[in-house]
Amino acid sequence: MPTHTSPAQPAPQKCYIETSMSAPNSLFVRACKSQPAGRTPVWFMRQAGRYMPEYRAIRKQHSLLEICKKPALAAEVTITAAEFLGVDAAIIFADLLLPLEVMGLPFHFSAGEGPVIEKPIRTQEDVAQLRTDRAADLAYVSEAVSQVAKHFAGKLPVIGFCGAPFTLASYMIEGGGSRHYLNTKKMMYNSPAAWDELMRKLVEVTANYSGAQVRAGADVIQIFDSWVGCLSVEDYRRYALPHVTNLVKRLQQTAAPVIYFGTDSATLLPAMNETGAEVIGLDWRISLDKGWSDLNHRCAVQGNLDPALLFADWKKLKSSAEQILQLAAGRPGHIFNLGHGILPETPVENVKNLTRLVQEHSPIKPATRSRKAEARSPRS
Ligand code: CP3
Image (cartoon, rainbow, N blue to C red; front, side, top):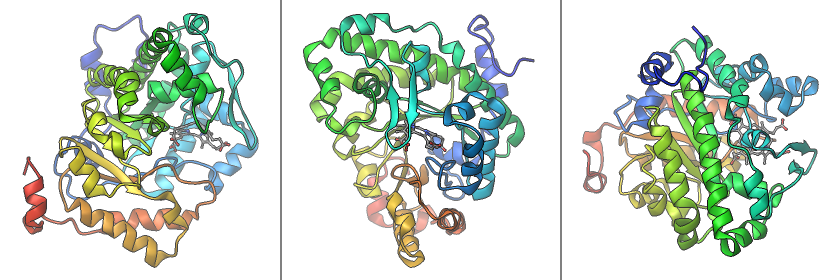
């Protein structure tokens, strides 16, 4: 049996998905579905990265894009990080920007500058030239997912991921990272037809790309909308929400739960909730209970320790993590994570100790939860 289906064989999809899900009853997947999970699952965004000596050793031999494009290497990096930390899920090692290449926008990483998109798009004509028919060329990512799922054989769930249309568009238009997103906003405001076409194309490609990851064995898909917090609520509703909602709906057809993550997103949470994603990621700028209540407890939440706290002494780190667990109050559907990715200089031992702390934290039984917490929960 092939490890993943090609676009030419869509018919047995549903059945194939169910058989290829690697760990559908894991703590993590149960928490994503807001089901009681026994204890709080934990994993970290950027759990494989420069803070880890094993990763730096591989990076000495291979560029970042080489690792992404060689499934055996990407699988090794994914597995090594997840096993070393002992976390409850493995996120596939890839990069958010890979789909840009198959849409016709090559990029590279330059030291100190981050990603550089060689010919950023600025006009309607540029958008018209973007291709949407080559998502299958990203099959190296599905192949890595399949190798990781095979390795863990149902013992650990695998997270696939893609960028949200707004965040990917911001890289395509700005040509890299940005402070004010001026070129992105200029296209939104001055060429709304080009903007909408760009969003439609990004949804098409990322839905196919993530669907292939699920068919290869990813249990959950996380959509990263890392830079969406630069938008007002009104602009988010007009220019981003309809498109990311389409992406969420397309991914939900695969039966894998969807995590929708943004940063600087405190004001956007009620609108983000309308995407219908099973899990919403919270950053550290809002307290976990306030964020969850702004989502009306409709969904599960993931987060939300400030990544900088991993540089604090153990006493401070421990009390901050315990506070998040207390704010979650044992309610089903909390996945412990940081509010954004692990930073490059982070002490590895702190990440490992934090994992243990969360896993050893005694679950709070719903009966011992405060009346206030009960009153806030429409489900329990
Ligand atoms: O989380 C994981 O362990 C999986 C791996 C992963 C990478 N990138 C590998 C990577 C994930 C989930 C990403 C997502 C990603 N890539 C995002 C969204 C996540 C977020 O933080 O909000 C973004 C915006 C990108 C684009 C990107 N790739 C940037 C801005 C950078 C940093 C450039 C720099 O020099 O710091 C990268 C590089 C990158 N992608 C690294 C890793 C581990 C850095 C390490 C390296 O160069 O080897």
